[in-house]
Image (tube, rainbow over all chains, first blue to last red; front, side):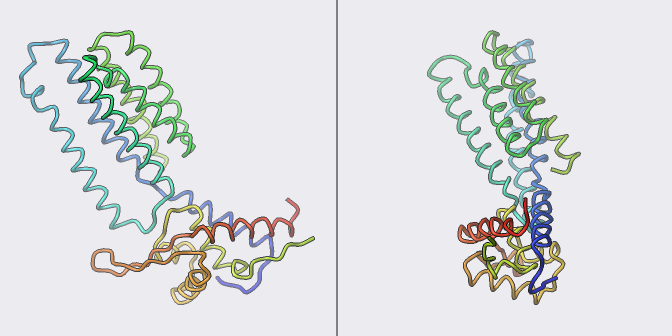
Amino acid sequence: MDKNTFSATDSLKTIEAAIIEAKSSKTGASFYYILWGIILFIYFIVHTIIILKPELRGTIIDTFNWVLFPIGGLLSYINKSKDQKEESYVPQLEKVYLFAFTGFAFMYAVLTFASNYLSSSIAIMFFPLIIGSTVYVVGGISKHKVSIFGGILSMLLTVVSILSEIEIQFFMASLACIASCIIPGITMRKSNV
Amino acid sequence: MFNELDPLLHSQLRLAIISLLIGLEEAEFVYLKEKTKATAGNLSLQIDKLNSAGYINVKKGFKGKYPVTICKITPKGLIAFEDYVVSIKTYIKI
């Protein structure tokens, strides 16, 4: 492939081809969007049902709802290990996902902490806002339109959430999981992002 | 007026390596070999030249039982690439 000299046009063609090639590299983010979208959706929808049907309180569904999180963590770990073995490159977007979702996790942790002091469910109330804004920003950087729209829709759900009772807040949080995680994840998978 | 082109980057393979690394956080030798379709020997030689110039950073390690060479563009390499693109534009009216 190497030539000592080549024209300026060849040079630009080489740059363009290489950059397009590198940009088309898969990030594997769709797996995490779908997995965590489904886990959080189940978690929030189970809470909604339990609040609406108090007779389910204390049942196996209520007691073991938290088990979803270690399962998600384990599946993420297995997938990450598999990817590290198979992949021969690290896309730039991978860092964007890492920082954006770590920021989301910190925000959610702080809101959960604040909920205990304020005697209010602000973590659930603002969940659609923080997941929506995270997905919106990442979607903007990665130019993934479904993520941008999903993020906006999710942020708008916060308005309903603020004006509603706790069971609707949980329901809005579950809808936010569909709008900003599951649907963008499925479209990413289909378009090989 | 034509700007002088960086001789280190004005080589098809070296330019392809740098251009690929621009869009990635880092890449393994096998990835660069697959994308550039260069021979292992030639690719290794060009990587060494870019590494010696400080344009890329080369890390050698192991992935499981197998040896792996990971390349990453450096800030110096990024500046050199940007300068090269600016210079090449003087040769073509864009």
